Amino acid sequence: MVLCSYIMSRLSTYKEIPNQKDNRDFINKWERRGVSYWGIVIALAVLVGAAFYSWPLAFRLFFIYIFIGIAYIGFLYIMMGDRMEEPDDWDTTGKTKKLLDLIDYRRHPFTISLIMYSLVIISFLLSKQLGIPIHMEVSGNPKYITSLPVMAFLTSGLMVVSIYVYIINNGDIFGIRKATQNENKMMLIRFLEICCCGLTLFIWLVEVVEALILYF
Image 1 (cartoon, rainbow, N blue to C red):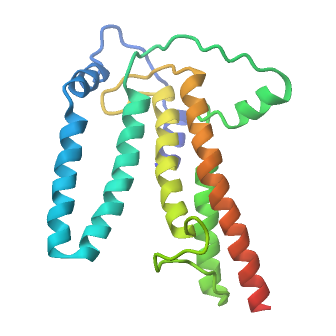
Image 2 (cartoon, rainbow, N blue to C red; image 1 turned 120 degrees about the horizontal axis):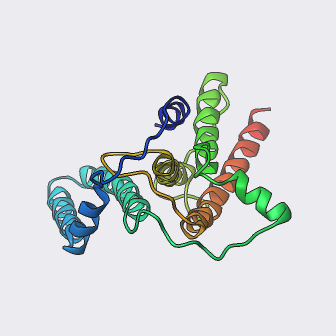
């Protein structure tokens, strides 16, 4: 998804077509009618039914719904509203501006969440290849607030949301026209990245150091 969006933005030239239909209006209208609310009700009903049939199945469905929910809520957050948003009040200069430009996902798709997620996956694969066991908590009793697999899972959802920002700021998607978004939406995504990716990085560092000490 990341590579395709980047290549398409580089190879294609966007042309503005006057009076072109914008599916953003359709999304705004249906959300005002509470489509998401009924979707949540149906998902909960399915989970309850699955729990009566099999607890493992219910838990698997729960995590699937969590990922879909993150991607869906992020999609609505980025795509809904006005196509051309009001200018924001953020006026940064100096090193702060350079840092924010570096993590401005309206310009490039290579996000912090993508880097962190790739780091976890690559280290896990290398540990299997080299025989260095990384302690991946899957028992439901992690020694930290959460476990590395769960945080990588949440990071992957944030990664998908971040790529929406790049796609919609550089072209159309699903009939939703290219939009210019202000800094306010970016600041919320950066805040979530600080919380999610920061905790993921901390647990990953501890687990890797512990695995290397035990191995050598």
